[in-house]
Length: 310
Image (cartoon, rainbow, N blue to C red):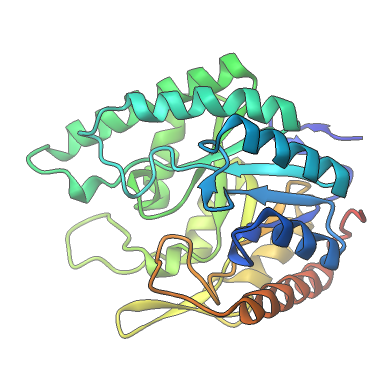
C-alpha cells in the first residue's frame, strides 16, 4: 500500500522506475508504447503532442486521460514550466500561479501527487541586488507552496540552473525560508556537474554532485537519473554510470537508507527538452531511451533496490 513518510513524501511498497517519455516522441501514442515495451506502469508527463500537459486544451486532456486509462498507465508526475530557467523574478508571477492552479484539477483527475517546478533564472535580472532577488524568489515560492497546499499536491523543486539550484546551500535556505511540506526536492544527478557552485567569489567551480546530494538527501522526494561530463565547456550526456553524476554511488546510498520514492530517467542523449538544436531520428530516440532505461534498471538492482513490478 502506498503512503507518506510523515512529511508528505510519497512512499510506495517499493520504488518504481519511470521517465520523461517525451524524449522518445512527442505523440502520446509513442510515449505509451515505450512504457509498455519497458514493462512500466508509470509515466512522467511533460509535453504531449507538442503541448505541455498543463497547457493543452480540455478536449485533448480528456483524450489523454482515456488513452492512459486504456493502457493501464498511471502518471507519476507533471513536468511544468513553472518558475523555470526561462523565467525571471522581475517577470509578472501571475503566470506561474495560474499554471499551478490550472494543473491541480488535472493532477487530481489523474491521481498525481507531484508537479516539478524551479526557482527562476537569477543572472538574467538586471539591476536587482542579490538580496532582493532572493526575497522575490522566496516570496513567489511561498505563494506556490500555498497554492499547492490548498490543492493537496506537492511542488518538487529541481536542482537545475535556477536560483535554488545554484548550490546546496541555496536549496536548503529556500526550503527553510518557505517552510512547507508542499515544497520538496527532486534531485537530478545530471545537473550539479554542469552547474556553477555560486558560493564565495568568482571564478566559480562546478558543483560536486555527491556533496550536493549528501547535503539535501533528507529532503529528496523524487530522483531524476541523468549523467554526463563537461567537455569543451558544455555538458555532454552519457549513459548512467558513465559520467560525473555519481549515479551508482547515489543509488547505493539511497537503497541502503530505505528510499522508497519514484526514480525517473531523463536521458538527454538523443534529444534535450530545452535545446531544440539537439535532434535525432525516431529510431535513435526510441533505442537510446530503451537502452537507458534498461541500464538504469540494472544499476538499481546492483544498488540493492527491489523495484515494483507493473
